[in-house]
Length: 250
Length: 210
Image (cartoon, rainbow over all chains, first blue to last red; front, top):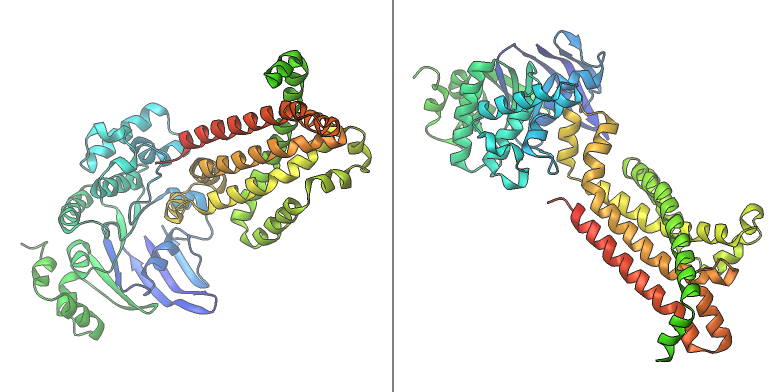
């Protein structure tokens, strides 16, 4: 679905990413885990070409993503960022319906789709006419997810989408997102620095450090991994991680 | 009151001067917006152009108005009609606040919002017209507001080259050493400036995003 082949990225002589090789399988949630500056957000932006690699190739749906029209590429990929990045001057309905609208869907279909999406992310239909500043942080983030899913893209890129939320709301959204993913089966690349979140949501976790991919492990492998970086992470997050990793089996 | 009687006796001439004044300010503001807003957008996206463009507008702004009118006088097509010349000079003065505010307004749009839009597949022109301009609009309008208020004041000087407007009364009154005549130009000019400031301020507030 998505494949990074020997991807490096430098900006102003600084090596942000080097020699990245990684595949994301259809329908999985691949979590990019790492510290600030480890290159995980850059990796995410390589997929929808907000960033172009200095060398190497990024394949999306089997084709190098620099050989397709960049606008077409991006409209086929949902994008959710921290604080949702909602347009403050658009209502919730217009935010969610934006990609369908610029894709030329008929009004009636857009309206129906907006209502459907609100329901999918657990928001009442009455919120459609509100503006982002009239919503809580959790509601905004839900709208962000709804907007990304509106045109039904096969791929979803999520950059610390739940990072700015209070712990309770974050927990709620993580749980709901897991349930949602079981229904929609998107191919998700999810950036976070929170190991607990990574274990909870990820099919696999790609650990990054200083612009390099350290290792790719399933949540269960991750908590037992002898890898020094992975075990440093596990130690830093302390107790209770096993249960987070075992969420699928319990 | 002497002044009031003067206004009543000369009301056609005063109204004619107000109309002439608004003509100069209206056209020059329109031209300044047509040039300044696109220039501001351009330098907001090509930041390396920002320094030279803003510096040039700054230098124009620093030329004394009377001198600028004088410089432009020998230009063939322009010099033929004083109002053209005055409109050009006022346009040049109005550029700086409009360019600067357009630039600041667009640069001030939350980078995350722009990036979200780009990531969703908006084209650059969709980003500009649906995201950047609407969000920068109130800042741009506040630049236009400054430009209009400056123009209303500066346009009085246009009478020095015979372009009409309320400055006619001011210059005539100076020559006649008659305060009533000066005030017949100065008071309406001040009221126009206040009205423009208030009106544009109201529009600006209405357009400000929450």
